[in-house]
Amino acid sequence: MKWSFKKKEKQQIEEKLISPKLDRRILNHVPDPESIRTTVDRRGIRNERLAAQNPDGVEAQALDKLRMLSLRYTADFDVYILGPRKRKKDTVKARAVDISSTGLLVNMEDWAQGDSMDFAIGTHASLSFNLPPGTMPEGFESRVKIDAKVVRSFIHQKGDQEVKGVAFEFDRPLAEYFQKKRWGYSIYSASFSLLLAVGIIMLMRIESIIYFQYHYLLYLYSLIAAAFLLTRYLFGAMYRDVPINPHYTPGVTIIIPCFNEEDWIQRTVLSCVNQEYPIDRLEVIVVDDQSTDQSVKKIKQVIESIHNEAERFATKERVKLHVLPENGGKRVALAEGVKMAKHDLVVFVDSDSFLEPNAIKHLVQPFQDPKMGGVAGRTDVENKYTNYVTKLQTVRYYISFRIMKAAESWFDSVTCLSGPLACYRKELIQKHTDAWLNQTFLGHPATFGDDRSMTNFILQTHRTGYQDAAICSTIVPSDVKVFMKQQMRWKRSWLRESLRAGGFIWRKEPFMALFFYIGLIVPIAAPAVVLYNLIYIPLVHGIFPSTFLMGLVLMALLMSLAHLLFRKSKLWIYGLVFVAFYSIVLLWQMPVAIATFWKSSWGTRETPEDIKEREKKEARKNKKARKNKNGMGLPF
Image (cartoon, rainbow, N blue to C red; front, side):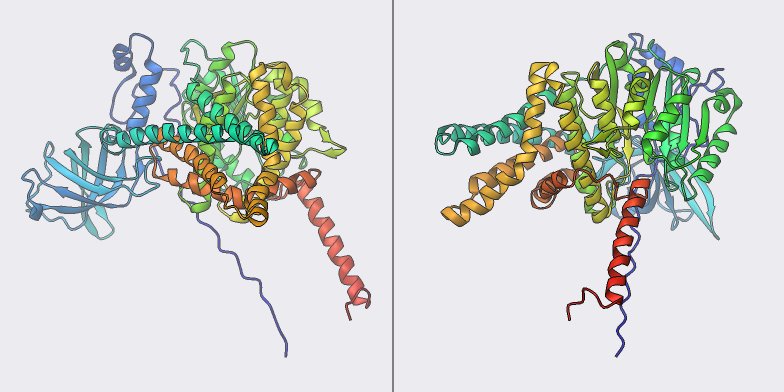
């Protein structure tokens, strides 16, 4: 009998992304140098009017708010329309086409002339619909019942059928509607619950002090871990962005390193060019690291479309593609981009990350301080609604930036200027380029962790900061195996660069230095502490670890409730799930990372080091196969 085994083909995960409705102008946020285009959105509100409304220099904030109000998203959900008479029998069912915070466009395929509601302009109606997750930004997913009026009504052709389209303007923006409905309750409940959780944690630490004499190492760890966690939330809450100075617009070069990113690179390039920033002070350089897919073709296509937008935006002089002669890795691609950069500030953007139109404007503000060497922006998860893996990462990403990096920024010592969006002084990058490119750790080449590594070089002599309003979103792993490989890579780079930073961080602000060393010890010791509390204590002493489990629950609540407080999102519950997943799975990667720190393969993409690793595995496999073929090493 002949047996055959076929490897089951892996299904491709379809990423679920929020879809802003495309503007007819691909560079709709770029300032017009000739003032030919004066409107800032399709509703016709003009810059002059905004300036008149904001004489005290808050025009930038007003423009940001206007942009959020006017941004439309493609939609596909049922909408129930109740006419001015409020009779349920007159309810009309429609289908949403697009939605913004201020209005909704629907199609009514079953509408016929002579229906009880004629949808004349100015007609008032009550709209009822359920906003599905992923239609609008996080926090908007909810049931909505809101009054609106008709501002446009038209007939259009959809296939062989005539369909009536109706545009409604809400009586108040959805943001204001939710603030008085679900968001307000979320803020109050999250605030109260956070204070309660902090109170319980502090009471539990009093217990640790009482029992300190019985096991001083364990209870000392407990006290240190709690103090470390609570102070991070405290300083994260105290953090504030550097406000926008409208007269400060230094020259910026955005560098995008690309390797096999054909799915996302066009959107990345477009988001970097389409910035609310003076065109003579912004250039974009894409450096392709010998991609083997269609990345270069996609980059050329989007650059050509950008060049065709309008000559007055001078994109031919400031948007460039450079292809490396051979694959050299991400650091080489970034270094080559810095060589080509003509401005004094350089921004590194990952090839699967997308900038908000005002990201650069916010990101550069801390550089008004001459000692500021680098600044990180906030990274949100773009594909947050794809599956449970991406939802788990959504809460973690937000807390990592809004709380953890914000707390470090309070002391001007952010320890990792993350790859998706970070800005540096070019002179500092050039000063450390050779050491960065040739970095080794205990004799082994350091290929990943480029962001942490460069941050360490900068942090030795300069300050590093964080700007929460400088926002980008990124594609995170939606496959569990890819996610696990990414986490292992991050832990190895964290371990390596944290040990490096430990040699000089003591020269920084004393509290920050203490903060750093505790943050280094706690994760390394965590696996042993968990084993002791969850395995040793129950088996040897027969005591259920209720206190320890309560501490884990409270830690999870801090993360989840902070996310609920700031984001008002239903995804907050995944903070609890993430802490459980971390304790059961991710925590145990740390001992493995310590034991295999020398590995330099990414594991998630075919870098030169990954190719070497694969070739080594194939060589070992072939050697074993030859031995079996020759009758050697067989178990019988």
